[in-house]
Length: 197
Image (cartoon, rainbow, N blue to C red):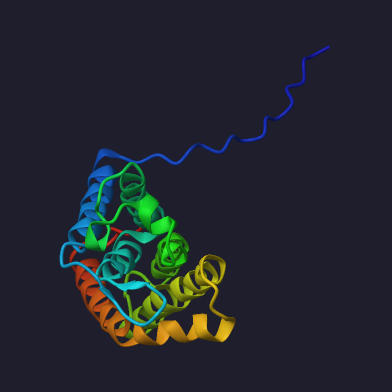
């Protein structure tokens, strides 16, 4: 009687990055850190600062895609969690998570993932209108949503007041969305396939 081999279920391989991938991840983590050098401006009563670093987060997803872009954001956040003062204003991740801006910081992760996943669907052409829409939804709506939830958990302000605090960020964030879209379109034209690796 012949032995019958039962088919084995395929194992999902862990996420692996090539040396080139890791270099790109490191570069974007450093870019996000560098964008914190100009500092931050705190507006309103919420205590949440306006920072240029959100531009780096949008760019990570729009240029590197979901896998590498999210990895770059996670690397950056991990560095802040071990005490490096890389967030705008010289803050560490632990300091930020203890304050009202915790939700906005956490929101960087799903925002990058969202932008990266949808960006790969519009490549290789990268239509400007679709790029703007994706970056706006990820860079504004997703971050604002998680940030607002964080405000409700960390402060005593009401729902509408928490939602209203986002109004001060909209003009600057729209500029970041436009800049990120223009840069991403140029990068994908020069280096096709960059987000898919």
